Image 1: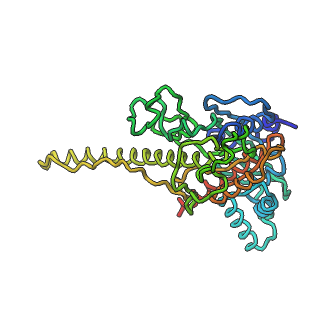
Image 2: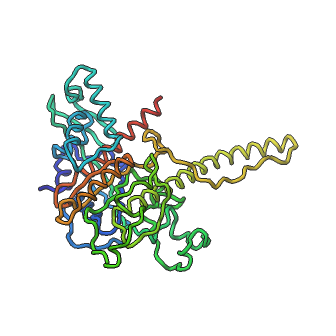
Image 3: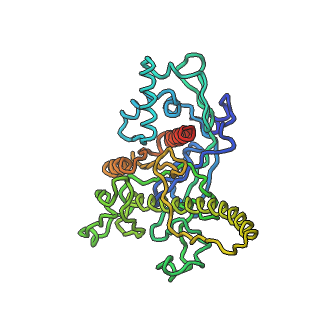
Length: 403
């Protein structure tokens, strides 16, 4: 089997369309969820069996070359009916509403045009911001150009050492009411890098296209203690309870503490709540920064006007500390990047079918995509599905701007 680098070098069009703007995707999750193994399998075609805990955020830039029929089917925007049938026939895959609605729209459009298959309506070549699709004559087999991708590997998420959106260098300036127990142990390491999107000095500054929230299908790497067998698991950490969510899939109350009964699956709501708060902080900062620049220009004009009019006072706005709400509409440019839930280790003997099914239920609740994989098998579809999601979202946002 050829690696991604070998396939990319042998492709006719070896220059990616997005060579100046790679697709940036971050992998977030608890310990032993296979984030590093998944990234290695996607970028190098191989992976390590030995577990080495990651200590810092590590980006991996490589050229992704989708060549198999399954990957071509996912990325080809003119094979909507076939992709929809393929997804419905699989138990380990749940398409996100953005992709599903795009496929339904394309299928209905092809049927209204009087064609049974939308493949006949496809042009010989199509192009978007990320990749290009080409066909030879009337062939149904499409060729996808290479895609430049940057996969961001992150350390294992620790709920006890996490402050959303804050920089580690700012901790000395924060009060005890913000840091809480972390103020008593200032030398304790705090895991902020994986969820850092922007606070004015973040290295990403919002330049991220999607998040993979990973969890393992294996319930626990260690057996429970005897004194924990009769204890009741709290609803916030139970994989059976979904009562703590609102109708839109958001958490009613976010608890950033962790218990000994936590699994990698129970960490997903905490990670998602941190992401939502981080993006709310980022958009608040960005919006008010732009508003501040406009007010500066207005203040200069007003100062010059009052200088000649003889008026020496004007109103000064009181600073606002309340966070702005982000939009959840994928067509809105202010909507946070998409999330896909990835369940790993699905083929191992200790894998729990209930945990896999709970991941699908959570994806339906959050209105996001879900995929169960195993690094021993081909997992290139993980990246293809997220790239298709990014492309469809950008198409919705462009269509909204044209209105």
